[in-house]
Image (cartoon, rainbow, N blue to C red; front, top):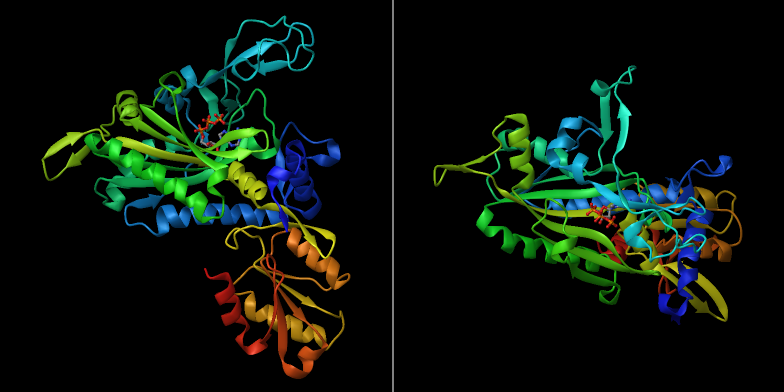
Length: 441
Ligand code: ATP
């Protein structure tokens, strides 16, 4: 019987996932030996594999499987002119309040009337705090050398619109996709990697004829919602929330968020926005470069509208971890497992020889070598087999291959399924076929 998230104390679920992430090597607090550093995190051997899977799966569905989307990878350090034109220097801010008693700072829109730290009701009036990280390019610190770390990847797609259009020879509708780091000087980061100051985004700008924007907006909301479902997040854990007019960003005409039920409540995984022609127009005006699209059929020039699905890779990884976290009862013993979709799992297969000695290890290594060109595999010959199974369950490995002493005689191994615990004995010769079948990619 599996115990669902609802049954685990809600406040504990985040702690348990954070704990597992650290214990098993998914995510570590950054600079931990110096006491950590302001809500920054490092991705360990398993975290880097899983995050890579999240990004590759997004790229596959958004770029690889489509005729109408191409990729790009832009600089993180960027010119102030970009952010001036985009409106970020003026408006990309959150309302900041100080507690006059304990001097903690908060986002006014995230707290009630009192300070969450000391309870005092003596707060300053809210003032705009710009979230962009500012630095200097080169050895001189002056107004002319100011640079910004990008707070979103999207602007890279707008300022390269003509470069991509001319080189890819795409016609509307078409999109430009990018995955990469973004930086926001969040006033109150927290909830593990849900809100950090350095994070990864997966964004796509889909350029369309203005009159078709509504239709494509609905199309992308549906496409993106299905992506999360297909990767194993249950419908009951997801919802689509349309923004009210007053919530909309300065560039948006319509936005819907795809939200996930985190232990503390629903939170955004991705926003799908109709950015209209705001950005292309703004960059045309500011740069003097005409960024209009030439429509060869009607022989006219116009600014396309843009539908943007903007997701967070690191935040989404956390949602997948929370959705997959389970505690089972196996023969009276508690078993913790990550029921990750196999496509997301860091390791697809673990090879576990029953002994550390030859000739069993030789055979186990040959099994490993036949699988590792195709799948990320783990090889573990330490501790008891029970402990090794428990470790693989906890890191979400869908298949364990046990190589035992009989394997030396019958050339067969045992395949163990993470979720059902069923075990089947198969010929080593057919192992790749069997694993392919079980993973069903
Ligand atoms: P929020 O309302 O949570 O601050 P946002 O609406 O400002 O998010 P967007 O600008 O739409 O976020 O960015 C797209 C996605 O990038 C978000 O849905 C989220 O997944 C991710 N993201 C944004 N800010 C952060 C952050 N500080 N830490 C981690 N991920 C983030």
